[in-house]
Every structure is written in C-alpha cells, then in structure tokens.
Image (tube, rainbow, N blue to C red):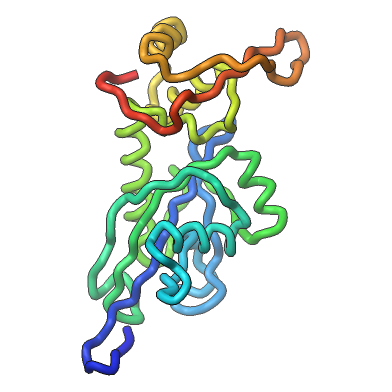
Length: 225
C-alpha cells in the first residue's frame, strides 16, 4: 500500500498467472518459490507488480512477467477474474488480475532448465502463498468448464498434434474417458482442425500418426465435446 501526493492510499496491483501444462499423468501447474517476504520460501503462482511506466495494459504486464520469470513468450493466456480485498496480502489492500496460461509440457520443462520454475500435479499442490490456492482452483474450474465447448484444451499441445493426443488432452481436462469414435466424429463435424502434410516422429512398433492443427486458435462452439 502506498500513499499518493493527493493523500489517497493506493492498493497493491499485481498480475498472477496460473501456468498450466499436461504430462502423461495429467494436469500440472508451474510455480515459483518466493525469494522474499511475505511468504519467503513458499511456492506461489507466477506473478508480479504492474509497472505503470512500462505496461500499457494488463496483457502487456502478463507478457513481461512471463518473459522475465519463465522466458516464455507467445503462449496462450486469458483473463480469469480480479481477486481483491484487504486481507489477501499482509502488506495491505491488494488487487490481483489473475490469468490462466496454457503451454505444452516440453516448453515448460525447457524453461525450467534456465528459470527456477517447478512443475506440480494440480491435485497435489497445496498451501501456496497469498490466496493462490483459490486462484488455482478457479483456473482449473475454468479450464474444465470451458474445455467442454471450446478448443482451449488444445493449447496444452504444440502447434501440431495427432488425433489420439488431442483426444487424450480432452479426456484428461474433462476427467472422463471420451469415446474415441464419437470424439473423432464431433471434431470433424465442428470443423475445428485441419490436416498438415506431416507425421509425428516414428515410434517403436507403431505407425507414425498424421499431424493436425487448429484452424482458428481458441474458439467456442454450441455443443459439448
């Protein structure tokens, strides 16, 4: 909390980013260990102060924080909601504009070799600093809810993917074992993806799968996958 020249107090303003990814076991979140008080040594979501002289808007602040603290750029993110009250930060009245960000596991694993981020299953990590448990829970519910009627889960994959990988991601996000035949039919009917002329890397005792990509980035549709 700071006091401006006009005598009015200014709340702390930050952006917090729920950076989600998926490995063979399920959904994971990338976090940092806080280097200073409050909550020194505790795990926290990736975040930082809004820099009023550098950030033209909240999206610019997210891009800067992601680049500075993870080295990642160009990944998908969208705003979740604002978390604001007098008790969420022991330093004073605080407002956080929270975002969900999605990236392939390979990108985050590569970033973790240079930046001090760690990856944890979302159903195991607890006791994050501030109100970050609440923000993480909200982000997971957003992904699982919106994932049923959008291409949001595909952002957990790379630009190109096989149909079995896309099916796996949707099944894990939604927490159900989606029927593969029905899934293929719905994806085709919704006209969400297009073939490329490429195939995945050969695997032992398995034919390489054809690679696809999204036609229009993140889009919503009028029925559930």
